[in-house]
Image 1 (cartoon, rainbow, N blue to C red):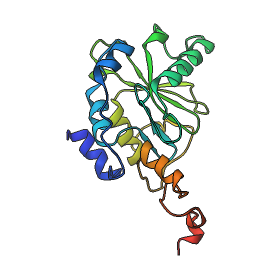
Image 2: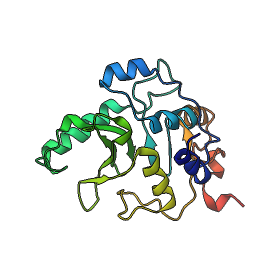
Image 3: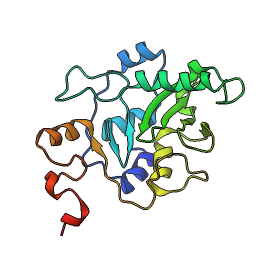
Length: 203
């Protein structure tokens, strides 16, 4: 595990994650590029899933799933590019919307993207398309894993999201585990029966 992923794992435990086993050839063929190494490392430990209203997407849909298809790059990338075009290119001067690729989403709903103009994916910065942020598009000079680490640790100079997750505890849940829990009629975040899922019932 590389240093940035290890640092994230210290504050966002991956015990409910899973190796996503991404078909890299298929993903590269669909998106025309190699994906950043920190993203593929993240997916091998956490997989696609969510924590505290923040979700990490898959590059391609899985072949099968228990309840619903988890989120993929496809729809949110189209949404971010459309927003860029509707805002008359306010993502920044000289940015081609084809260089916006979504990897995450929030309940805000914000879209977490890479700006893919650099030919080296490991240098792609994070671009947030915010729904209720001060600026619709904000660029963060770090990779996806470091962005998440700073988010969980509350170390961003400018808070990046429309949803405020600061000050709470965070638990990452893989999408398959979330769907298994829903099938078992337990809270997908806590793993408790629905009747015991609210804090006032935890005593």
